Image: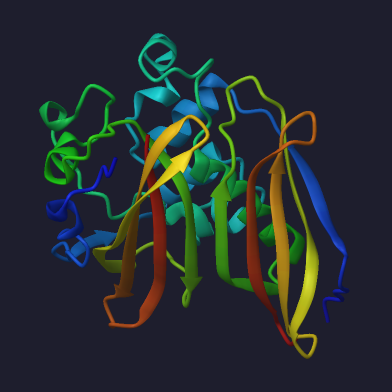
Length: 135
Length: 151
């Protein structure tokens, strides 16, 4: 059975989105918001310094952080995240997390998740509740 | 100054007509590539990654219905908020079943709450939307509570 302990860290992952990956993400989720692909508009009209990395993409990275760690030995049954500041194209970001507590007798756990910028600033924070398979 | 009028507040509780979405393998594969998934089941489209559901039940509109920012302008006209710039605030999702190609999902979207707050750089309006999703067998698939911020 998958062994989990409180305070255990999840494997961290570095993310460096590009113009191409950002375009493909927005095409895949059918999001035409110009702040993700039109730099002139993003700067002059919306007041951002660069193209904006989608908030839900950061949410995806946090979910992946958990799913890749669990590797089918458990599943997420509740997931929550919020963006705390904008992340921009060109930023190097890092997803990670840790086990906060056991919810139910070594079968259900609460995890804390995050995406950090290059100076360890939190750009998105989240949590997941997971259940472990009894294999 | 209050940004939200009594008419805005009347939108709380408004339910949209149910929307039906059929999940297909190619869409899952595109999403998996774009988000740099590592697991074979996602990359080959055998199962949808958790966050594949983002935007799944947003209405598809023609190009002439998109506003200057690229987003669906009819939604703004209906909401008619005094703040027009949109940001994704966050989400909370309860998952009951995994999603596979061939699944037919029926989603119902509801405006759960509307409120305003003062942010660091000015006022903000928070729109809280709830999406409840079942499958063709009427089993619960997921419930999502989305926060959309207008600045």
